[in-house]
Amino acid sequence: MKPKILVFTGPPGSGKSTQAQLVANEYRLAYFDTGAMFRRLKMEGFSTPEMDRGELMDPLTTLELTQKEYQKIIEGNPAGISVSGSFRTLDESFGKDRQGGLAKWLSDKYGKESIYFFRINLSEEEAAKRNAMRGEGRQDDNPKLMKTRIEEYRARTEPVFKELENKGYRVIDIDGAPSKEEVFASIKEHLKS
Image 1: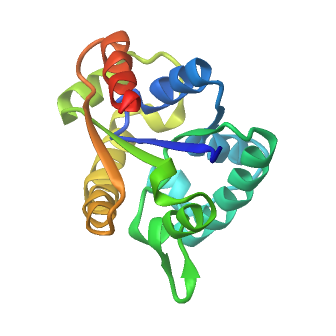
Image 2: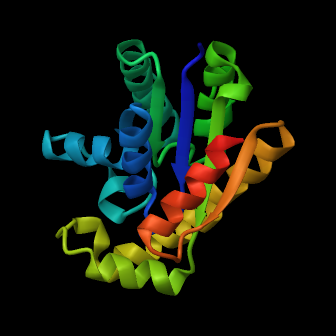
């Protein structure tokens, strides 16, 4: 049986990490959070000007780091992986200058039919409210960086979904506004089909 690759993306505060963890637990998948990987690397001394400004990392750096992590994780859990926060840019997703992206790499390795992209939709107002209430004390949750992060998502991540759909990948829209339990129930319904 091929592993399932479940990718959760959405604006900051949409609950993508929460849902990716819930799905990982429910279906016994490995869990990977791209943002957590970068926060861990920053604590270990890795830093870039983009990170400090609340912008997305260089796509090819992200691609290189996440590909290595995915490979290790999937080899350790043949059922698959539930991912939060990858596929944030066109270059990360589809590659650049003869370096293939995550979408092609994963589909070559596991087949397009094994990959589910969940786009968790949430208004900017609700995203800002949730991040202000999150209480995790994350540096990137302050209002100024939050605005930058939402702008980055709109400009750089939203175009990825159109391209995924154009290339025949399964993209599933999820309303992120209801409770996390209701959102999870909606995701599980989509995984039944």
